[in-house]
Structure formats: C-alpha cells, structure tokens
Length: 208
Image (cartoon, rainbow, N blue to C red):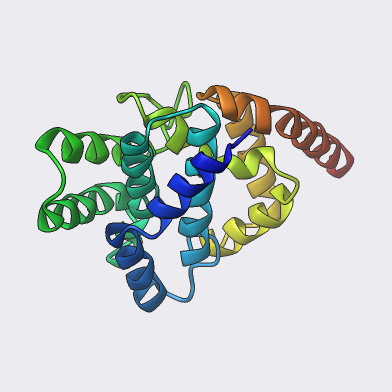
C-alpha cells in the first residue's frame, strides 16, 4: 500500500527536470513507426517502477534514481533500435552530469540499471547487477502480469513486423524464463502473469 507521504514523493520524482526533459524529448523525437516502445511506454514504466519501489518502501533518493533510470531506459530508440540500452545509458549519464546534483556513484548505478534491462538470449531473462534493478526490470516487463497483456503483445508484434502467432510463442518462451525480482512485483503482478500464461497456452493449443 502506498502511503500519502510516498504519493507526494512519487509526484515530486515524476516532475523532476531530469525526467520531464527526457519525456518531452521522446514525445518529439521517437519514430512514429514504434508502436510498443512509445513515449507512453516510457511514462508507464516510470510510473510502475515508482509505484513498486514505493510499495517496498524505498527511500526518496532511491526512488529518484529509479525514476530516472525508468524514464531513460528506452531513450536510445531516438537514435536506433539495435543495442538501444547502451545509448539510453549514455543519454542518462549526460543528463545527470549536466544537472549537477548527482554523484559519480549515482550515475554509474543508473547506467548499470539501464544496461540490466537488456533481455538475455538464454537462461534467466535478465541479470541483476544493482540494488535497484529489480524494480526497474519488473516495471519494464509489467505487461506480462497485467490484464492488457495481449494488447501490448499485439503492439510489439506490429513494431517488430512479425506474425502474431510467432509473437505468442516467443512471449510464452519469455514467460518461462522470467521471474519477478522485487517483492512488490511478485505480489502485484504474479497472479495475473499466471493467468496470462494459462490463456496463452490455451490459445496456442487451439491453434495447433
């Protein structure tokens, strides 16, 4: 449960200039052919990361760092789609350095958090290398545990220009490798993920 004081902190973080500036840039600069990795996706991941972090009672500075990492995690799509995490991390670094409020450790932490969002090709879906990565990664893949899962999957299939049946198979494979990393993610997203997984299995079975 998010307390009134935590809601105030979340609102403050959302309106931090480092975050609002990248959201404004995404609105102006993203390729309109991106149907999944949109400015709305980045805003949604930011909100989800802050909600999960606040539910797990992260301190205010940690929530600010989490919010910045979430806001920038897909910013690299402004330049190109391949290996966008590296570009995203560099954009976040430059913004934080220009702002002047953040330590080298803060900047290094956020860079690694963003790099941690890269999907691994084999084994567990993600590698966790920082103390705050669990909340960012859970927020980034929150669609796996939400009721709009199929809608979001269709948008991703459209963006990648691949057939929906192939996308469904890939989504199921991801679900099998994925797990929630934060306590709040497990509690708030775990049950719906299992429902989505069961629905996906039924859909694929009916197609065969």
